[in-house]
Image (cartoon, rainbow, N blue to C red):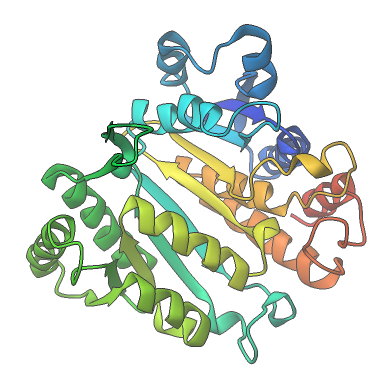
Length: 353
């Protein structure tokens, strides 16, 4: 039998990123032994410290080198001494766009009602996935200033949507809904009543594609209504598909109702190429070096990575261990309130695989 082996690029990044990545790698090592696969990891220093020393974010050659890996494990990008936007655009967005990671995948799953800020909601009520288009829309960075700095200044930001980009995102969402096989319901989240060009395209493409998936139930919700239903009736949702901007907003609300940023993981997916996985809570620089940051989101991201490369048993074991540790060992999910230091949480997840 051929040994399963993977090349994993590790980008610890900034702030608490290296701390949570270390715990993810600890769990990866334990999982590889238990489930008999091998891996090679290579660490890259892309982040704020390198930028401050060299002025570099990530070069075209470095980006091309990442294509040689099976997956990327990212800690966090964001440095208090670097102007906002430089690292995010120069590393995060450049990597997403350069590796054509056109899907942002965000599971929203509640492990215990004790973690949920919503009254009367239980784990069976909050278990859905947001499929966010990850390479177009407002994040394309297209637009212009007219008469900048003058009293009649105009700032134009373009939401750029192509039929190809929209359709491949929608098709991924339909396939994912079918594979997930929970309620087999896919909700298109948009704003068709106001954004009449972009969302006319999204709605038409959605209506055409759904004919190919008669087993998938479909519906539509405006983005403002979606945020309302996340709070009032999250049990209505199974899989949600939306554009880049709306996806960015609603997934943070999703993180809160599942228990906070400490448990929220995401994947930047290229189904035919190299995908990147990360905790979505950011670099949290105020907690750096204090050993109080929750590593579970990074560990869950590592689980998503393994699931995507085909190690589904290991991924399932990691999730089950996270659930056990979160529900039976930890006092809370928030930084500094867990009852254990960061490193001990990683130890507990590794031990309970």
